[in-house]
Amino acid sequence: ALISMRQMLDHAAEFGYGVPAFNVNNLEQTRAIMEAAQETNSPVIMQASAGARKYAGPNFLRHMILAAIEEFPEIPVCMHQDHGTSPAICQRSIALGFSSVMMDGSLEADGKTPASYEYNVDVTRRTVEMAHACGVSVEGELGCLGSLETGEAGEEDGVGAAGKLSMDQMLTDPEEAADFVAKTGVDALAIACGTSHGAYKFTRPPTGDILAIDRIKEIHKRIPNTHLVMHGSSSVPQEWLAIINEFGGAIPETYGVPVEQIAEGIKHGVRKINIDTDLRLASTGATRRFLAENPAEFDPRKYLKAQLDAMKQICIDRYEVFGTAGNA
Ligand code: G3H
Ligand code: 13P
Ligand code: NA
Ligand code: ZN
Image (cartoon, rainbow, N blue to C red; front, side, top):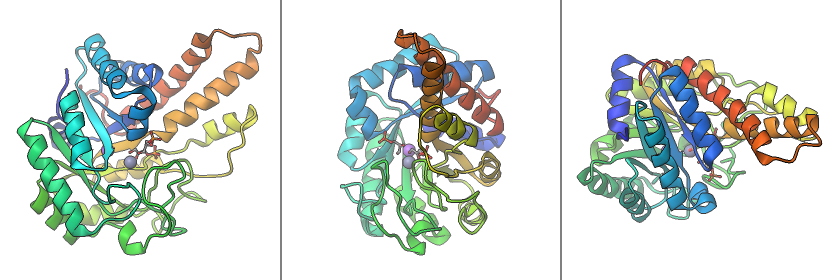
């Protein structure tokens, strides 16, 4: 059944678990997520980015997610629009039938320039007003994703702020977060704590100075009733990097967010965990390996099935570690 994010995350808060929000662009990702959810009895958040809407088209995305709901009727599904850059974009998604939208007012409408606090409050508050009138949930964002190691926004995949950011911008302030939630009425708040989108988050396994889980604890202490969202939460599995590189890829050394750190965040108010890159790495690794090991094979369904199985295993792992399993 299609449910709102608010409904799903209220349950997660009551029972102390987190829900991974996986990005979807195609059939294989959608099926991988749903099969994993079915096997572990987990609720699902599927989110569509601007890039996904451009790749698949909004109608294909919508019908794919609706098909998933129809085929897996016992699994609660939240259909979420990821990183909306204006109230108008969120309004279009609401009209399409999304049960949740993200108004990312941490950046201006270009999706690149860090926005003023006043701008963020204004666009987010307007989106909440409109969305709540339709029974749709809203995620806002305060703070900009960026590397505490380099000060770079790290928008190599074209998502997020561009260029250099200050320490202040990359760590959400707890007082400002309280004011923001009071002024906007958001259902969930994405915070910045040193993660960034894509595969290149950290040059070494992250320690507390570059992945600030302590900041999450401070924010949660200040606004205990607000559902927190972690973006840029792929773990960048070393085993998948090794497979990609063994079978012809060339991805330099890089590290993601360890699942244990996310589990620690979940103990302190994190309820939605955004993951895209991990499924991309698994599907690319599985495809490279399959084609290298089966050079005479040319039926795409064969390597697409290898992708699906690889992505499904990542989803199962996250559902288990985040405590999502058993809560559908
Ligand atoms: O928000 C970041 C996600 O990884 C989506 O990326 O715009 O390339 O689909 P995308
Ligand atoms: P990753 O790039 O770490 O998977 O993050 C995805 C994300 O935050 C989508 O909004
Ligand atoms: Na989002
Ligand atoms: Zn994101």
